[in-house]
Length: 226
Image (cartoon, rainbow, N blue to C red):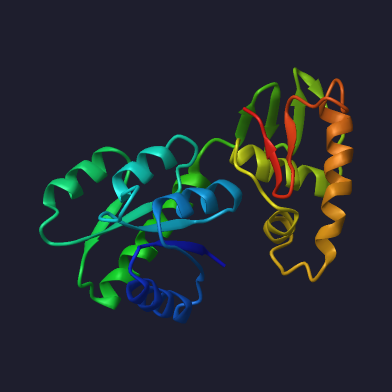
């Protein structure tokens, strides 16, 4: 299930978008400001962001600039007809598309599906080899090395490490990691994730008590340092 973040300071617009998207089977979260959006995106995984341009405080342009420092998640701007220059600027600084308010629900859903399809295809056609820091994962061969030395990982350890390596610097909660590797709701089974994380640390860190690669963000989850 794709997860979408709606960032707009107008509650009625967020509610309408939520109805359209959940009706199509998407999981939806909401943010009422740029700051809330960045906080959500830094601690959770999303597949797409709908971003309003004109918001008090941190607007959509500045939010996108900051977001692009740590994420390549697709962004669709929600714009007014009078914001043509902002549309151009938004595309230049990292937005993927825009739709003008008031929007047609069918057009909105078509643009969302197009961006998700493009993002999925790009990720799927990329190299099977991922390198982060001293770690290299070859997904075709299902092998992992750390500074050139091969590692012996369980399937679950491999899957967790792959998720973390695909988004270095992004924090994933135990629940999110479980959902991503199992593609199902954990119903409490996410308590097993910290055990796998500990075993991973013992295998990839030269000093597991002072990790340089696999970090805990207390109260939020885990991330892999690039």
